[in-house]
Image (cartoon, rainbow, N blue to C red; front, side, top):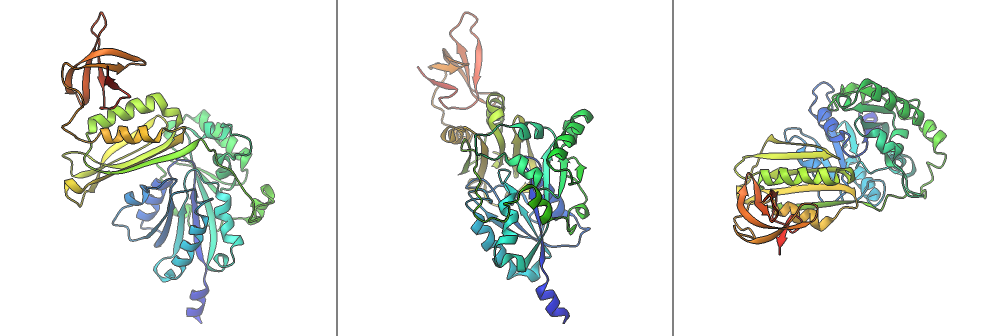
Length: 395
């Protein structure tokens, strides 16, 4: 009798959502590394792009089942893949106690949640325990206020509306006045969800797991058409992702200078960027991530387990109006190479807002590919951080 009850027991599912860079993967790692809940999880990850990064930074020591649902928003093109992943996992239900789904930051949670009610088989296998939304105190007010084209949903708003519990993360990046304003705006959208403040997504897992917080009636109150499987939604077509996977070793100084210039000039359009890089002469992986103009990158404790010649760099950028090929070209130009296009004394044009005539004075100066002396009265010296036409080109 007990065995039969165990076989028919539904597996609890926790959905982690929140806009790009809010701290979902950090929260997931906290849960997986915590030893107080005594649970083993199957993790379903979705990333908006062709190459996954988050799955590769989940600690290797954590014994979990990880499935990536790639190249699209989990609420749209890959929803069928989500259903199939859940069905495959159920065949191995004896290996885990719960499922955590981490959606891309561009996902409207509605179709993900809908899966647990409109599919014929899934509701007999799983119970939706809660939707946890992580919001970034630094940028959430801008995201909630962002105007979208007609008919296009604001995903950040939808993520707050569907939350059973909201984590107000990165509270160290906002003062008390702003935090109270955020809480006020969030409660206008979702007056019933508890709001927990935190930094670095550090929250006790017991606040998030097996809390049985999902309430279908509450959802139907603000979205009466929620259970309509033909309900459609539209994403902002100007938002895209560009990803790159390439073998080689990166010049850290070149990369830092390029990223610095990139976020200074185009940070407002960069929703999220992250990657795992091989730095020349360093045995550990360099992990970077950023949101808008906030960049963080460090050499991690994770060592490469392949020869230096076989190391593979991965990066993903998500944002508005991205120039895909330019981003790839710039990243590839950060790879260590002895070959530069120009030599000392070559006449070139340097981009200082506009292309200006100058002369190459030095190669590899303080980590920059070129130091260039402009043909002006002051003989001004400027740098080209990497060897691409965007920064320096032949006359």
